[in-house]
Length: 139
Length: 409
Ligand SMILES: Cc1ncc(COP(=O)(O)O)c(C=O)c1O
Image 1 (tube, chains in turn purple, orange):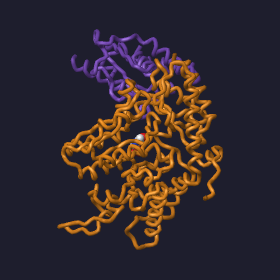
Image 2 (tube, rainbow over the protein chains, first blue to last red):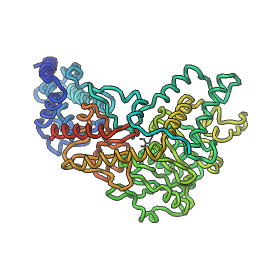
Image 3 (cartoon, helix red, strand yellow):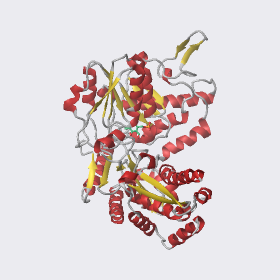
Image 4 (cartoon, each protein chain N blue to C red):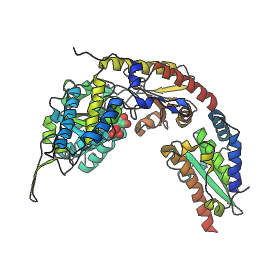
């Protein structure tokens, strides 16, 4: 699936969750099921600045596709990053760079885009794009 | 005795239009008063009135409007002086807020410090009562000492003699901790400072709205607060300073209003308080802060204190019924703030789910990172109360907590 299709799919999934409790229960579930990352990957350079909670993000490139690994000490943050990973995993650095993340607004999580928290979310997207830049230029 | 207004929370809530709103379709429960308070209609009206009827620059024009604005601004200064029981209104300097006032002292009084002098603060200070002193110490080659606290979040007064000495020139401490709610014994701390010849700087950002303040009785050298935490506008605050110090201190900023005579060879400075008020001040803010103080002065302060302490205790008692709760700040002398964590849950997660239920709390380090380091936590969830909060709101908050925890565990 393309980044576009992934986002559409998430929006559709969330349409079924019609109140805030169901939405957040789903995000919390996603957070809980995000695979743990090893402690040794929780380095300063993998730490995303500007979040209220700590977020680490790491990536590997395989056959010109990027795969992401992330963790956070807050479960909702982890759930949100799981959504981002779902959108971007297995995509090429070029596609990631050219994409626009719009699903957050459409699934009713726009409050996470407000200044203090957003730092969190926007910084995660920025970090994902940075990883893409790093790997795109290697090519 | 003056006739004071009856303390009725129901009536008080009517005065605050911003409390009557829905957040995500739910009644707003505003428990972030430590960050900033909501504003009563009288303050809102006065902002509107100033700009629609009285707007002019002050201390300058001979014309009618300028005199009217000047009078109102200076009347507000007198209202504030009476509220703090300052000996004269010339001891009331308008600032941008607490942070601005502390920087003024650190810069200006700081000029009187010499290499090797010391500044003493405490382990529970807000960043704004830490960083300006660090900057001063760097500039003047002085050293910064920190009076520690115990696990309950109380100052280790029995150890104070290890931290204070004749070298100490400034002792700066908060009256009430914005993170823990601890009420410090400031009269005692002022005496201690004076015993060693230091000046006592009281950060009143969290006490002006909760406690009656009498600067002469406290005998503090400086007392600071922010207008926005005491039902007034943002961008305005007050520095109270004893006249003898304000006279000795050099100006902080140069410009209009603070001068008597300017030539290219030499400038002489204006008298107090104008010496410290360079440039056009926040005129509307100054006037409206006076209105906020008048609003508060309608009540018997004892009733406000009693109500807010009741809310603090009530919230704390109910929070203690949660399994795995840790409350930070367990001093017997505590008001206005309850800071906590549920073990295994990040404060951000709890804050997010409370927000979805219309409850505004603060999560994070509350600008007290050293205090977070002391407790070895990334942050807390903080409820902070104002005179318009109710027990019913706390009941609702507790049920919302229950729901949030169930969702997260
Ligand atoms: C104890 C304390 N000191 C200082 C400040 C700084 O106040 P302001 O940001 O209004 O300058 C605050 C505000 O949070 C505070 O709680």
